[in-house]
Image (cartoon, rainbow, N blue to C red; front, side):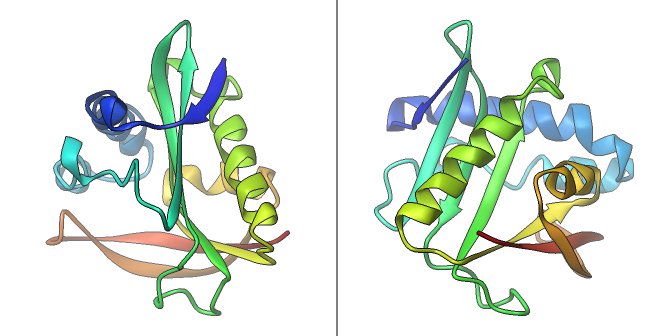
Length: 163
């Protein structure tokens, strides 16, 4: 496995991983309507692979992009309590789930946060990812209402970690 900075050329592969991850792993925690709405909320042009205020990485397994992660150095104001930075995404293809890909992506994002003198990370986790983040040292803050695809209600879990 190789974790590296994403490039604009990775956008289509990142989008495919995102959709496959939602379709393959999302039903463990969400109903069919929520999963369908979640899976339509992004397109290849929606990933900030070359934005200066984020760290966007991909994980390659056997030369193919099988996961991605995004860290925002300017966290969303919706995090309560506020955090210094925000893990916006860690997604893996279902075929590599529970094989260390997500952990490697998250470790890379956390390292980038430390290099930026970040003390606390916040995130919104899908319910099916809560145990992953807990195993990586994140604490639950609260359940939050969320609209998948901007219109289908659901619940996510706000989490936090002190680095």
